[in-house]
Length: 59
Image (cartoon, rainbow, N blue to C red):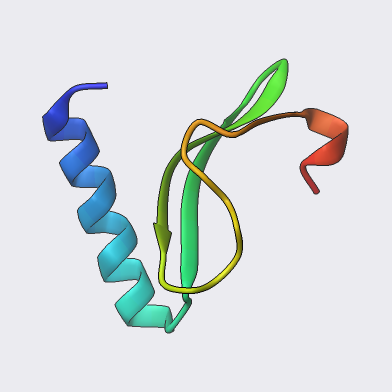
């Protein structure tokens, strides 16, 4: 990922958190697996960037 794209994701997650009051927000990608791309976490759940799970374990 480019740093510009990463910064845009960080900004989007921060603004979204401020707007809806969530402690944890994330962007993920689902194809063969569920992969967490970017996480904004303020003492919410234990998601980590790069975490990858089978699709049936992601819900």
